[in-house]
Image (tube, rainbow, N blue to C red; front, top):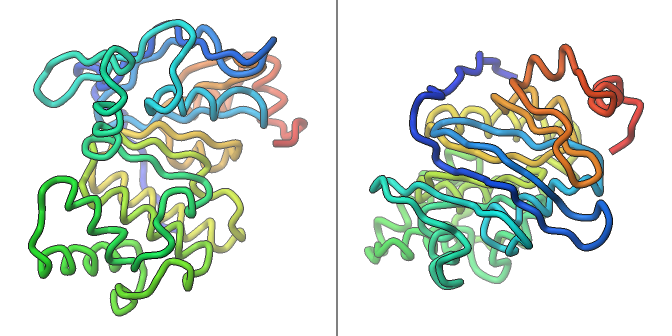
Length: 268
């Protein structure tokens, strides 16, 4: 892998996302509760914890897919306005996810249309922004396939003909082609062979840096969290038990649960 040093975002800049006392529970300790944090422009925030800790539920709430029982998710658009994500209509939330945000699923089939071509998958996001010129859409599709290390000559092939790692690359291209302000990533390297994970992770790091993306990343893999994130939230039994700069938490964990995670006593 090529390595680079994470640069801390300017924490004096206005927040991109404010999360205030979010709770979404399905039973005792199932889901997420009492979550507060602020995401700044250009920051990658990692959310880590074992399976069932509540991190995926939290991500769905943040992405506007699942309403919280209590609390608020406030988004600050580029026009400096303030937008309460759950005070707007469902249609407006869907438009946000399509136009200004992006969601990368662990299973790429959840983020792709498997019955249409690779180029159509990428082009659809651009068409949502109003682009209609076929030649420009096709050129953009080929360019993004190259950026995610897919053969642009396969632009007319269906994702069903791609390997799992290639499908994930295509999902990333589909998501990032519109250069969203905020990207949610749910275990983006999960379920792939180690060698495929390494190449994909290196590609994600490069794109995050080049595009200046703001990212909320869910992962059970602390190595992925260290490589990608500036700050971490550690979740256990639906709550955040430790938060801070990634290197500080992973090198000097303070909470007993985080210490277990770091020492690999717990299995994901």
